[in-house]
Amino acid sequence: MDFEHARFNMVEQQIRPWDVANPDVCRLLMAARRERYVPLSMRALAFADIEVPLPCGQTMLKPIIEGRILQAIGTKRGRTTLEIGTGSGYFASLLASFSERVYTVEIEPELAQLARNNFACNEIANVTVEEGDGAQGWFAQAPYDLIVVSGGLPELPGALLAQLSPGGRLFAFVGEAPAMKACFVVRKNEKQLQNHELFETLAPMLRHTPYMCEFPL
Image (cartoon, rainbow, N blue to C red; front, top):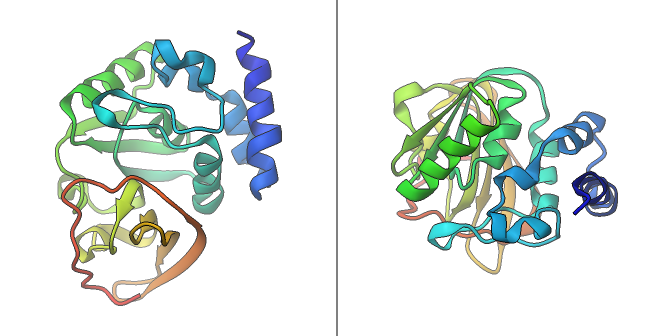
């Protein structure tokens, strides 16, 4: 399979038409080797407009969703990034390209090890895979300049929002089917958060999702 041609078509025919105009984002997606994070049996579908199946009943996000997340958060370099929901490690590898250190939390041990193997094979040294439940964030390395939640949450938990640095950014899928929204939150100061609802979509819910939001948005 011609992966380079398929990658070009993914960016030009799927991602750009879905309002992803940031040239840095498009360059990043053109450079990233998505096929290396897809199960071997599914590699021919690495760039298709589908949620590629992973072990443990999980899936990768569609390329267009990955592009929209990057468009929202930007590629401004930051010190510390938290990702909730590692999967195969592909999106963490994108975050690693503009973060000094990425901490990615995965609840499934099999997927956590898969991601570690993928990072080692692709020589990505600035990602740490934490095995556990990240529905409330990951306090051990907080605060974070950027938090990306790859699964759905019924509400944004205050514990997670509290782990944002001043000026920090957070992306999450919030709500329940069929009315989930992609949300982008910026911490303006210790008490003020600014929330932007970007687009409607569906995303698999995180396990053990919390329902209490302690911070008004």
